[in-house]
Image (tube, rainbow, N blue to C red; front, side, top):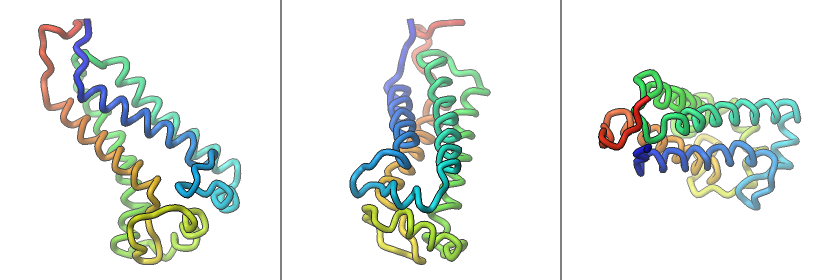
Length: 167
C-alpha cells in the first residue's frame, strides 16, 4: 500500500497544469491569455513544434518520475532530480523574462519579439524596460516555482514509514 502524501498530490497536480500549459500555449486560442496568430507570425511552425516537444517531454519525464515513486521512499537521486531539473527550467525563465523585465539586462533584444507575441495578451504587471510577462506565463512561472518548493519539502520530510511500500 502506498502512503501518498498531500504534497505529492499537489506536486503532481502542478506538473499536470504545466503539461497542459506546454501543450496549449502556442496552439490553442485562450482568449486574451494568448495570441496564437501573433506567435505563429513570429516563430516558424518547426520552432513551435520543437519548443512544444521539448517542454512536453521534460514535464512528462517529471510526471513519470513522480508517478513511479509517489507514496514510496524517494531515492536521493530522484529527490535531487525533482529539484534540480525544474530549477534549471526556472533559471531559464528568470533569464528570459524577469532579469530583462526587472533590470533591463537583455531587454532590448526581447522587446520587439515579446511585444509582437504577447503585446495583445492580458497582463496585470506594469510594463518595465519595454516588456511585461503576460498573465498566462506568470501563472506558469508561479506554479513551477511552487512545484520546486513542494519538491524540496518532499525531499527533506519523511513520510509515515509504516505505510510505505518497500521495494
